[in-house]
Amino acid sequence: MKKNIALITALLIATGICTVNAAEIHPQRQAELLYLLKHDCGSCHGMRLEGGLGPALTAKRLAPYGIEFLALTIVQGRPGTPMPPWRPFITDPEAYWLAGQLKQGVNQ
Image (cartoon, rainbow, N blue to C red; front, side, top):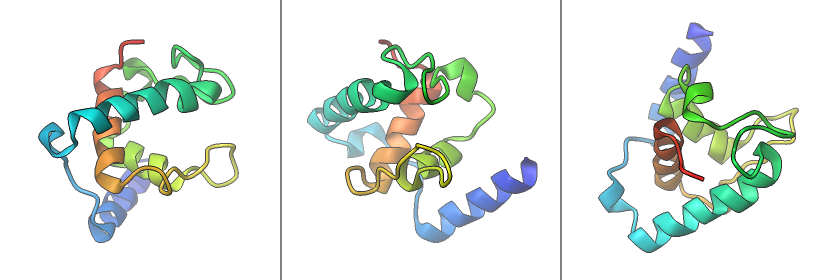
Protein backbone atom coordinates (compact mmCIF):
# COMPACT_ATOMS: atom_id res chain seq x y z
CA MET A 1 0.00 0.00 0.00
CA LYS A 2 2.85 2.45 0.80
CA LYS A 3 4.25 1.90 -2.71
CA ASN A 4 0.85 2.70 -4.20
CA ILE A 5 0.55 5.91 -2.18
CA ALA A 6 4.06 6.99 -3.22
CA LEU A 7 3.25 6.27 -6.86
CA ILE A 8 -0.02 8.18 -6.66
CA THR A 9 1.69 11.13 -4.96
CA ALA A 10 4.29 11.23 -7.73
CA LEU A 11 1.50 11.12 -10.32
CA LEU A 12 -0.29 14.00 -8.60
CA ILE A 13 2.85 16.10 -8.66
CA ALA A 14 3.34 15.29 -12.34
CA THR A 15 -0.27 16.14 -13.24
CA GLY A 16 -0.26 19.39 -11.29
CA ILE A 17 -2.72 18.62 -8.51
CA CYS A 18 -1.50 20.56 -5.50
CA THR A 19 -2.69 21.91 -2.19
CA VAL A 20 -5.54 24.39 -2.39
CA ASN A 21 -6.38 27.20 -0.05
CA ALA A 22 -10.13 27.43 0.65
CA ALA A 23 -9.97 31.09 -0.37
CA GLU A 24 -9.12 29.94 -3.90
CA ILE A 25 -12.51 28.23 -4.21
CA HIS A 26 -15.31 30.82 -4.29
CA PRO A 27 -17.81 30.37 -1.43
CA GLN A 28 -20.66 29.81 -3.90
CA ARG A 29 -18.66 27.05 -5.60
CA GLN A 30 -17.84 25.53 -2.20
CA ALA A 31 -21.58 25.34 -1.51
CA GLU A 32 -22.14 23.74 -4.93
CA LEU A 33 -19.43 21.16 -4.26
CA LEU A 34 -20.92 20.28 -0.88
CA TYR A 35 -24.34 19.96 -2.51
CA LEU A 36 -22.83 17.67 -5.15
CA LEU A 37 -21.19 15.62 -2.41
CA LYS A 38 -24.43 15.19 -0.51
CA HIS A 39 -26.67 14.47 -3.46
CA ASP A 40 -24.54 12.94 -6.21
CA CYS A 41 -21.88 11.17 -4.14
CA GLY A 42 -24.51 10.35 -1.53
CA SER A 43 -26.51 8.36 -4.08
CA CYS A 44 -23.80 5.68 -3.93
CA HIS A 45 -21.98 6.39 -0.67
CA GLY A 46 -25.17 6.87 1.35
CA MET A 47 -27.00 10.12 2.00
CA ARG A 48 -25.11 10.47 5.29
CA LEU A 49 -21.90 9.27 3.56
CA GLU A 50 -21.85 6.24 5.86
CA GLY A 51 -21.70 3.75 3.01
CA GLY A 52 -24.00 2.16 0.49
CA LEU A 53 -23.01 0.84 -2.93
CA GLY A 54 -19.71 2.67 -2.33
CA PRO A 55 -17.74 2.73 0.92
CA ALA A 56 -18.31 5.24 3.70
CA LEU A 57 -16.79 8.69 3.20
CA THR A 58 -16.47 9.51 6.88
CA ALA A 59 -13.33 11.09 8.32
CA LYS A 60 -12.64 7.92 10.31
CA ARG A 61 -12.92 5.68 7.24
CA LEU A 62 -10.74 8.00 5.15
CA ALA A 63 -8.09 8.57 7.84
CA PRO A 64 -5.52 6.18 6.27
CA TYR A 65 -5.66 7.97 2.91
CA GLY A 66 -3.94 11.20 1.98
CA ILE A 67 -5.76 14.14 0.46
CA GLU A 68 -3.80 13.62 -2.76
CA PHE A 69 -5.04 10.05 -3.09
CA LEU A 70 -8.63 11.09 -2.45
CA ALA A 71 -8.45 13.98 -4.93
CA LEU A 72 -7.08 11.66 -7.59
CA THR A 73 -9.87 9.18 -6.91
CA ILE A 74 -12.45 11.96 -7.30
CA VAL A 75 -11.15 13.24 -10.63
CA GLN A 76 -10.15 9.90 -12.19
CA GLY A 77 -12.66 7.53 -10.61
CA ARG A 78 -11.80 3.91 -9.80
CA PRO A 79 -11.55 1.73 -12.93
CA GLY A 80 -13.31 -1.60 -12.54
CA THR A 81 -15.73 -0.16 -9.96
CA PRO A 82 -18.91 1.93 -10.19
CA MET A 83 -16.89 5.03 -9.12
CA PRO A 84 -16.93 7.37 -12.14
CA PRO A 85 -14.39 10.06 -12.93
CA TRP A 86 -15.72 13.46 -11.88
CA ARG A 87 -13.17 15.45 -13.90
CA PRO A 88 -15.85 16.69 -16.35
CA PHE A 89 -17.59 18.42 -13.43
CA ILE A 90 -14.81 19.16 -10.92
CA THR A 91 -11.43 20.79 -11.46
CA ASP A 92 -8.30 19.40 -9.84
CA PRO A 93 -8.18 22.19 -7.22
CA GLU A 94 -11.87 21.63 -6.43
CA ALA A 95 -11.27 17.89 -6.01
CA TYR A 96 -8.39 18.64 -3.69
CA TRP A 97 -10.57 21.04 -1.67
CA LEU A 98 -13.39 18.49 -1.50
CA ALA A 99 -10.97 15.76 -0.39
CA GLY A 100 -9.84 18.07 2.40
CA GLN A 101 -13.44 18.56 3.49
CA LEU A 102 -13.96 14.79 3.57
CA LYS A 103 -10.81 14.31 5.64
CA GLN A 104 -12.10 16.87 8.16
CA GLY A 105 -15.51 15.24 8.28
CA VAL A 106 -18.44 16.74 6.42
CA ASN A 107 -21.49 17.45 8.57
CA GLN A 108 -24.56 15.92 7.01
